[in-house]
Length: 266
Ligand code: KIV
Ligand code: NA
Image (cartoon, rainbow, N blue to C red; front, side, top):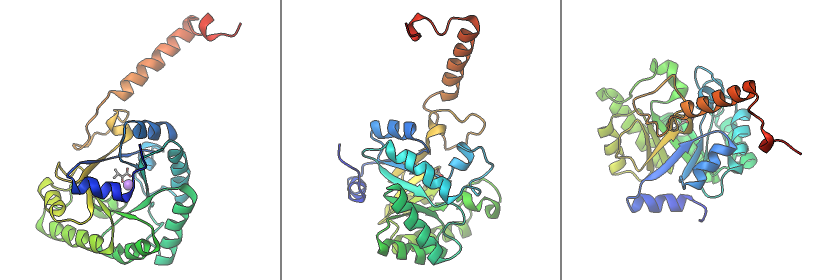
């Protein structure tokens, strides 16, 4: 299998083939995604919540994103690798943002960066693209703005929000964002945005009409048990499988069953 590039992804869009993306944070899980032919692996700043156990994505640092991306990169042979720019790594100034995005590209071997926001960051995106850094946008519910948005919710149900979303989408598209993630957006709106979009749309809680879909690894394998947004589908009972393995291990050690002859050196 050959390396997935921007060109491969646009070809898929043109042929009407769905693009698959998984957000994950470590070598082993990235390797599994790559093995089954997931097109894009995203090192999402959701790692703040899923990996670090924090309450939101706001506390994740650029160094932490780089650390996880290096691990993920080693598990990938073929997938297109995207990195989330964390909160405050691109909002302070354009210079700061460019330096930070450049750092990610230089230090990790990633193929693209992802930034949350619309019209306000269009100029920055245009600049990044002109430097040669592919940019993925992220609109709808943007977790780095959870406090401003007033909690986890669908964005674009009301007409004014829908209009703003359309303006933001257009701005990102024109700025050259080759891909745009739509999170927690009404299905019909995501469909409308995708219909005449030059950019590749990737949905999460945005219905079936996007060019592709993304889910967090730990959500889709059922390792996250405490929260389950409507848009998550669990394809395995990961937490239960692991819990049973751990229980069995504990029992066997306590009963002197493990290790047996087989796991011991002569
Ligand atoms: O942080 C993340 O994992 C994401 C995806 C869910 C889109 O931004
Ligand atoms: Na994210």
